Length: 488
Image 1: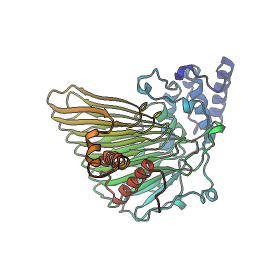
Image 2 (image 1 turned 90 degrees about the vertical axis):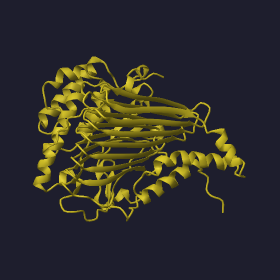
Image 3 (image 1 turned 120 degrees about the vertical axis):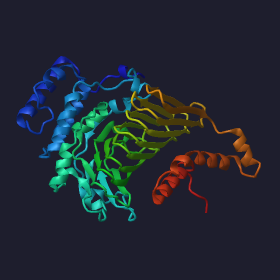
Image 4 (image 1 turned 30 degrees about the horizontal axis):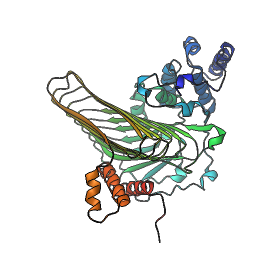
């Protein structure tokens, strides 16, 4: 059913709208420094805004404590400026043409309060002792579940609200939260209770990968229609010549619980710096997972992104990368898999504005369920002054069930005239000659199919730079392909 035909779960009559606006004004007068609705100019915009979005914004504001953090205040105010005039996306909007968000809109949104530490003891959140780990539970940093080893001098990993270095706070204050994404980006800016800060000073190389583990502890039963809502946010600042490897892992305690994780990561890669970013999404099959990754690369920097996404009923990742200097390298490797009634969606945009930029992107997906759907919309924009650019983009998809669906849209926009650019797309089932090769050597059909499916994913999985993470992802994919316990 088209999203435009769905009715909101609350009244949208004029009196209800005026009530909401009055509530907004009262909150503003009570706490003008903190409230995201601090400017009188919001009043006419609110009257024209989507009432469902306005209700979520008010619910988020009511759930958040006040803060004395200037950067966090700036983020909330700048996000609210645009949020109140942004409608809920529908299938009529081109970016959401193949992505149905009615699962979220038909639910009762409930912002998650700070977790109680005793209630977390039952979670399976064992810390990998090989990696320094920061645990983020429903958007809140939990020190008792974290294990941060000693970092080089000047490196900071933790809550923005706890930064005690004046130099780091000055640097963060200079950063402008200027990028404006879609509605979900803005909701995160209004609703995030904190910002996780990863700061690497000039010339510093962090040897061990940093694991950011996002744990969804709150969840509801499917029949309740409630959707606990969290907004984790991370800011990564890597100064000139710095290097760091970051692993994001999203997990949920119960594979049947319903919740909504709405996450944002912003990455600034300084001149000559290098960031390796691994992203693993393994949340509940009844969850909504919406993520934004925004990256700004300065000259001679390198950003490497490796992603495996297998969880969520609705999973969408928006990646926006801006090369703001020459001789910049960007590598994107992503793998999505649907094994149930899922939507796995990747929207990527890479903007090259300077000479001799390099970008290579490979996206793979497997849809192994008749009601599963994968979406890929990849845009590479090579502007006028991005001469001698080398850009490649490839998407390959496997459809393993008769009614499985994939929608792909690789897109190169080239204005510069001295470039080397290519893109390609392929959609198929497993090759019969490959299956025959296995059968001719005594391998049964089912084992052959599993081997070919796993090898299809391995091209991306093998690119994880950390061996323990790579092994963990391999094991998880094999379990999804063969959920039955091994015979004894």
